[in-house]
Amino acid sequence: MLPQKSIAFYTLGCKVNYSESSFIANQFNHNGFTIKNFNDKADIYVINTCAVTSTAVKKSRNIINKALHNNPDSFIVVTGCITETEKLALSEINEIGLIVGANEKFSLFDLICRKINSEVELGSYNLTEKSFYPSFSSGERTRSFLKIQDGCDYFCSYCVIPYARGRSRSDTVNNIVKNASNIVAKGIREIVLTGINIGDFRNNQGERLVDVLLALEKIEGLYRIRMSSVEPDLLTDDILQLTSQSEKILNHFHLPLQSGSNRILKLMNRKYQIELFRERLFKIKELMPDACIGTDIITGFPTETESDFNDSLGFLESLPLSYMHVFSYSKRNQTQASKMGENVPPSLKKERTNVLLSLADQKKTIFYSTQIGKIHQVLFESKNDKGYIHGFSKNYLKVKMLYDKYLINKIVSIPLTTIDNDGVFVEDKKNIIKTV
Image (cartoon, rainbow, N blue to C red; front, side, top):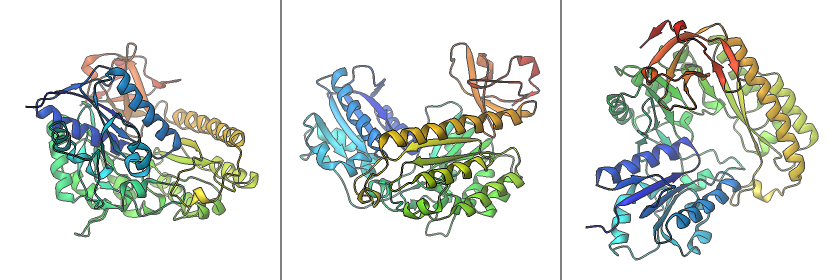
């Protein structure tokens, strides 16, 4: 019998981490543990970390301190990506009871039980072999994040993730369909396909991402299939054609660009140049004029000149983008870029980031304005946020209405009317055309 029965989770980083944390928490829940809010006093705290930026690493350390503040006598478990990239630093934190490698987090229930019963002697547990472990989130009533792929073979010069999560590996289509069917059985209507590089989905059966999409389309009761980020060189014509003809696969694409300068893209070890990126975006718009297209941009990469930045700015201005995520370059040890030096001052990084954030706001406003007056299908979520209920359209417009619990997990066909700071505000529920 375990003396400690309450456990709390804190997750940082990507949707893959969130799907994994949710999946792992269910193992504890099904075995009699009480799942608590991280801000509450718990016997065990599990921190699923992120290492993508130095800020994420710093935040991970702050969360460890927060857990100790919540309960100084608690058992602290750290897992996730910084266990691979910050091993030495973590091993020097005496308050951590167990360090579990990123790929071994799926053994957490067994490891924690054994550690508490003094059956694990070491303070860390890590294997070199990287297998694929499927997972999906189940905390939301309306959507689930389903992991179909893990790891990355791209080794972009700024990115530490391949060192933390290992090489690219994927699930099988049969197993994905099985997990998706389980999700649908819970009443969840939208599945978001997640992974570190889902466009690189491939397995020993020769299956690719388009095969996953074709199989999921056939699941009865699954209304929506949304793809997370796909590298532009991996967004193939067959995926675009299928999406443009599908009632279930959503016309929302996130294609990371990182820089609008071919010189910087080469230094970043990206697998394309801006010409291919442009071609993919305009191909999407040709097939799906109302598609939402987002991207990621890094400012201040080593050796980025004023000319390089202006090239990026001009290129971004020319594209039919719907939103942009903008990040200042963050040096990560182990990467090729960390050896290039940091010749762009922090103040200049911030200035360039702010310029692109302003452009991002403009792009989003323009995209939203093109959708006003059109009828959209919106899936509403459960949260009551200051008297409003929020949802997302197929093409990722954020929509809000006055709260009505009847709308929870409903797909509502409605004309969009007014843009506000929170997205689109639909003032009158009488405008609802159809509810599914």
